[in-house]
Image 1 (cartoon, helix red, strand yellow):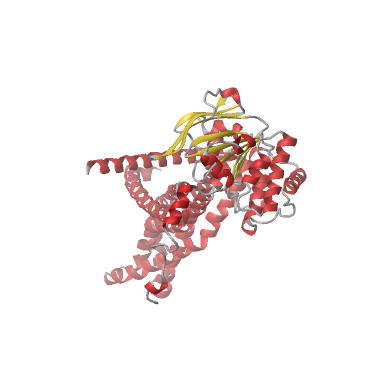
Image 2 (cartoon, helix red, strand yellow):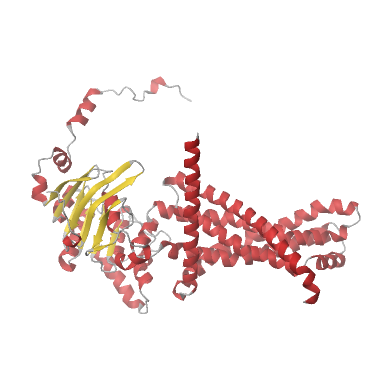
Length: 269
Length: 280
């Protein structure tokens, strides 16, 4: 019993090590891409595929999150006569947690799956080996532009998700549930700070980087055949999803500690 | 003749005691060989004997478990990916299924190595170069096609055009004529010969196609179960005493396999009989 357990643990540690090395190489290659304008065309193409084409789904996700929050929270707040404060609840939830996390999950499904499937197919059809055979680093050519595009554009996609979440919540609260628009915005403005919005957007860089690196790693290491590519896509999505949640928890702990340290100094700034 | 004591300077590419294992399975078992410059060396052997794995070791796409690989006397199997870049630029690798980048057009596939290593300013010269390389493989006019719109043979020819775009010193071909019609296969054979005669390119070809072997090979090496069992020119191979070599080059089934077929009779015990099953 101990032997298989030990073997599995060793394999797990080895897997983490390989992933760490891949991530390190990817970020180094990304840094090098930044200083080589000759490779920008690859980044711009990936920005179009990863960023521009994801705008509609991310906007739809954000809008529905805002609208659902309004419907669900209205009853409880109205029972206490606090329905005008619905804006604070919706907007703080959207910009701080739900907008960034759900936009990232949507990206993990749309972009992560596509990246793994594309690179996985390239791997099994020897296209990655072909890149290597020409003396070109596959990580530099294939991974760096994807990581860079994902890392740079996820925060912007989160802004879209936040914006539509705010508008969706406003639409349902004011137009459908009849809450006074002035009071709705007034309470929202008092409750939501710049800190909340900016931390939500800041998470985007990390979520984007994690999605791209995990998906590319799974694509590069996928097993042969249609089943291998399918399994790699599933593993990539699960890996991205867990990482997004784990990173989000980490951010919640770190950012709240930072906030507590600097909040008393706010009146001095 | 199986060479044993080979020095790194004995050829443009030298492998010494090359061993490759995947788990418990030994794919290459202590292979030593020197590949001569400006000659065509053909590696033959039954499927799964490690020919492709051997070819990939020559360009360090695979790393050996034991043994060394040398290029012009310099050990290369222990170099980092970055250190391998200038060495790989001297190679052209033609993959078994072509391995064309399916998101790029034929034109973009061919200029890929060029674009990665050089700053292109004169696009007209590049267009001319692509046209010339495609004409060499009889594919001029297909510049704007995507690989998905080409047949297997056409993809293979484009892959060769891409492999020779940087005028490599060494071209490694993985089954270049497999799956091609006899005329296209002969075009590929002629192309390999032309590159060797005119540009003095060193070629290492992995193939099953004995017609192609006799046409292009200066030297034939036969691998069997991860080991070299025959090495020499066409005449040496044709008169080789080893039964496995003779069976392979004549395309004959072995006595053991024939006996197994005879024993099974005219009807296989496990053969599907429709009357044994009910219709759905």
